[in-house]
Amino acid sequence: MARKCDLCGKGTVFGNNVPRKGLPKKKGGAGQNEGVKTRRTFKPNLVQVKTTIGSTKKTIKVCTRCLKAGKVAKAL
Image (tube, rainbow, N blue to C red):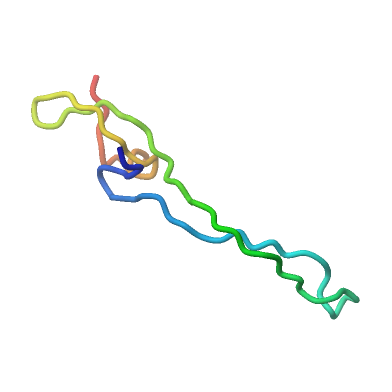
C-alpha cells in the first residue's frame, strides 16, 4: 500500500541532507566546507481513520493536516 493521503494525495517526497561543517572564511574558518549530499525522504504523517462513506464504514489513510482541518468525520 502506498504512503499517500486518500483525501489530498500528499505522499513521500525526496530531498538531500546537506552537512555544513566549519566556520565561514570571514570568521577565520576554511570556508563553508559542504560535505557530501546524501538522499533522504520526507514522509507524510498518516493516520488510519474509520469513517462513514455513504452508508458503509471504511478505514482510510488520512494525513493529520486533513484530519485537523475537518475534511473527514470519524465514525462512531
